Length: 438
Ligand SMILES: Cc1cc2nc3c(=O)[nH]c(=O)nc-3n(C[C@H](O)[C@H](O)[C@H](O)COP(=O)(O)OP(=O)(O)OC[C@H]3O[C@@H](n4cnc5c(N)ncnc54)[C@H](O)[C@@H]3O)c2cc1C
View 1: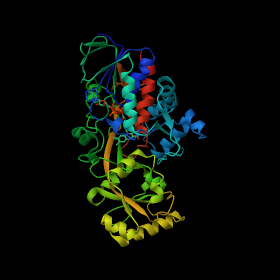
View 2: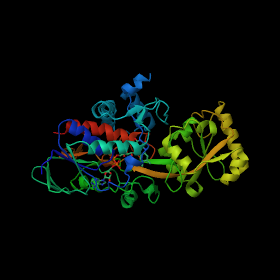
View 3: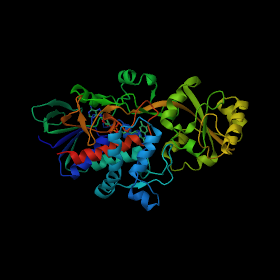
View 4: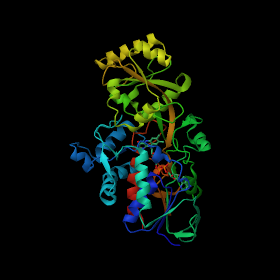
């Protein structure tokens, strides 16, 4: 059997590429070995920045790819994968238009979604805004396309003098181009220990399917890698990893305290950078403290609503009551909240937080959180169109990569991950890649 391209992995990157490639008239074989296990796309918040989209403009938001790049560079100075970031920034509004106009995707701009590091409101999602809903929409969309053949199998691939032979479909497939979109290596303990030793043994709240197996193909063929120590951390994860609070609470005025009732970090550094800081506290946990007025603004925040429904959020009429429920020192917690009061009235924060939004008042809310590794950012280095690069800088003939398999927008460690970088790269690089396929 002959197809134009084989895509390995039906996650955010793979399904986007499949849709965009078939729209160009290409025939696609899409391989997914773990079709019944939620991948990172399905687990994600489903929020992606498309700076400069027409949907933002319709809501009166002035934004542009350049403004987002400026935010990214300010957030992760010296750590930005410039070639990919620029390519992705320009591609994202086009990728969003394609989904809405070309695929009738029910995507929209989320005017109430704020995130640390983003100076504009620029998140987009599906209705309801969640990774699970977005993944489900993509799955039905790819399966409805006659030009996309869907195979639930682990593909085996052989390079040939020209093109590739792929086993895993009913017949061996002959393709000229291969797209590696099997995700990162967050669930591969050996690779995490090797490349991100600080998170070895830490909770992985991403998918078990991110085992690095698709990336390994590129490595085996001599690909160059970039930013292998970069990852998206999640400092708002409830212990156990089944739920998380989402990223918005600090921007709305929430704080984090340790078991002694003391703040230990400028909470506005972002959910990713918070992860190792929370893990370094006694017991590897922190209490995220906020109030009912903040909770009232989280009605559309899917991750928070999941945590709430799972009973992860405490409610208390006073500081003393909250301290007793959580088992932290009441006096220390009261002092901390007094300091927060002072900071929200203009006093500078000894920990360097820039803004507090409000002083917290009863009824108070709180939830225990820990630090988790959500997904890895390092991967196969590509050119601006997703072509995998060899050690000598030449492109690897016929091999493309996007999503967690490919190098992300910014390294290093957890600090460089600006919220939304994951799906931004999966869709943005996916768009560029799909235009470059022959
Ligand atoms: C808790 C959490 C929250 C997140 N929230 C956000 C968010 O709100 N916004 C954002 O931008 N990003 C977010 N992300 C990151 C985002 O989910 C990822 O960046 C994105 O899913 C990467 O897409 P992908 O296609 O590379 O990987 P995935 O979506 O994980 O898909 C990879 C697919 O490849 C398959 N596969 C694995 N090995 C092979 C193989 N050898 N051959 C073929 N197929 C294979 C897997 O089964 C899987 O289906 C979040 C991640 C997590 C874990």
